Length: 176
Image 1 (spheres, one colour):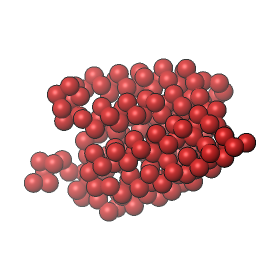
Image 2 (cartoon, helix red, strand yellow):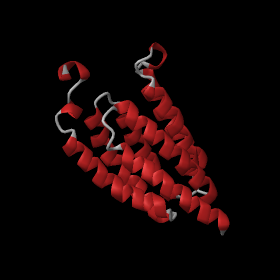
Image 3 (cartoon, helix red, strand yellow):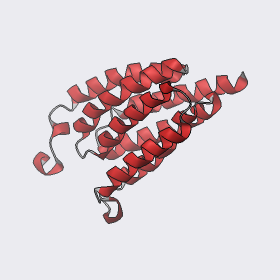
Image 4 (cartoon, helix red, strand yellow):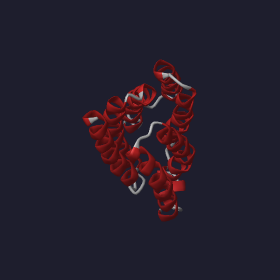
């Protein structure tokens, strides 16, 4: 009982960090906040016994670190996207218990392609495919923070798309 309570608290902290991430202006700021949110969700899912989500959040930590350094030579190769997508599928398979566990894998694929995007609003736009999957999954667990997170994430993504509607679709070169 205490583990579940602490897991719910971790999910609420993860929710706050993840929701705030979509209001960040730069891709690196978004990824830093998403990484912190994933770390708390990882702890939450461990305590809630949701192993598919645990495995996927471990991949998210790796994914976010690699894509954060995408401007470095070692992380700039396009093969990283395919490698991380393969990790998503393997992680989902390792944690698979029920058919509900397929839903966050689909969301993780959207989220991984989104994190690979250079433009912030393309990132936000593709995350709209990610959040509904995690919302459905979090309802099935249930994860209070996860449910609230994805509902607010969808609103936050839409607000971010509106706030940064021009800049977020332009490359750095086009922005001048």
